[in-house]
Length: 315
Image (cartoon, rainbow, N blue to C red; front, top):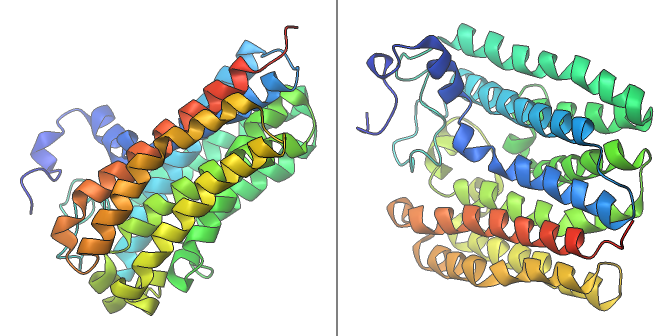
């Protein structure tokens, strides 16, 4: 066990223990996705309703936390986390709560499904204030989060994990916009797609250190199927698509000029891509690239949200 990994003695407070099991440091991508959605609605001329915005933000984070816990549970069942000797903790290989005896697999399952269930009443309240379309957006998001790792679908094990992440974080943006706007519109889909691609790249680069363990557990991720030396070019392609899409949408006036600020995160993604190209087959050398990928998604998303918000016409 790595010294930084969790142990039972490190969590005498049960509340802190359960909070840590959700991997809260990685929930920021959902927070940023919600901010893009709120900024999209504001840009379109809809004044922000604070109570709905706060409920949206909080329960989107609860849903993401539940998905993280559920993913840990199913990775414990399929044996991939236990077999992972090249993990880049805390970024890959799971939370290690089950493997290190901090929480039992049963406790993690109850906790994860409990978090997902807690989202339902909040979603129904928001739906009553925003419109029935939110039902389908919320249901789609929860199903994607569950199906990402849970059988029988196990999307991440079938080479569909990145597509599931793009769809899931698109729905985060669309849902946050819908709560304020009251209907589904094209604007949040356009604003959210580049960001969702950057989030998918985080999950993609995390597959490289996990490759051998995933293969042993029968998880046919893209990196397992293609091999690291072939798969690494996919990261560069997604990077180019994400930032190219921002600039294309701005050039076609589908996003405001200030939204181009999201492309200022490109150097971070490009630097991460260079490191991945050099160290794709050497997991120990990928930690800086993983950190840069997380930073690029968060910074690019925040700048995109700020650009949308600042471009709103006076109410």
